[in-house]
Image (cartoon, rainbow, N blue to C red):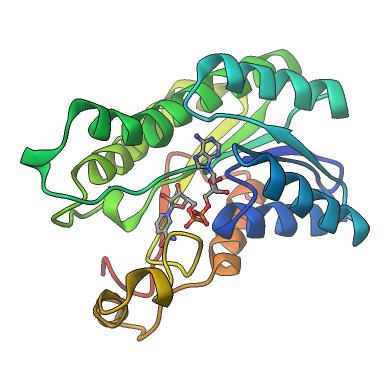
Length: 246
Ligand code: NAI
């Protein structure tokens, strides 16, 4: 029996890519997982597929950028499974374009999901953890939370913020049995990143990873499992990036 056996976890952005792989990895370790996503159709279908494989997964719709919606998500998870042990604040969206041409709305659309979403998820999960005596917050940052890249100003800003938020919350709650960590993935083949969507840019991205390929979602999920299970790790950001930031 592993440490995730019987634990209750929420994964936001759980319908696709890194989130979906994390839902699966946690459920395969015996966790009861709430697959939370904005996309009802795909989210429900993925949860049903995993249930059919014998895993304990339920779908709940969430808009990670809305405080009310995230509050409701945490309440629903507790209602469904009686408690909450882990939240993975993973929902995120990308951004493209030159900074001086972005409207405030373009900028804030990304901050709202990628940064505010981590604040809301952490806040409401921690409120539960304080009642029950502990828990784990896991955040998806990015290599672009550690280094920058031109043309992704709001995304880089939001992912750097996630690093600071992870460390700040970790220090705040370290003495109360609440651990907070993040993973910073390199480019991972997913809904946002694939050869079809990126065309001529795909090979250039591969070249930035010394290991000579992009990552796959399971490799990121594996890091989340490690961080969920290891009781001595807090306030850290684990790069899983094929050497991108080395
Ligand atoms: P994806 O596009 O495959 O999946 C993202 C999921 O989030 C989708 O199911 C989408 O419906 C959901 N979502 C979007 N907005 C939402 C909202 N407001 N509320 C709830 N759900 C919402 O993305 P991927 O690649 O798996 O990304 C997951 C996380 O990993 C993101 O935070 C992303 O920034 C981060 N990341 C991804 C990298 C990559 O190369 N794919 C690299 C580094 C970080």
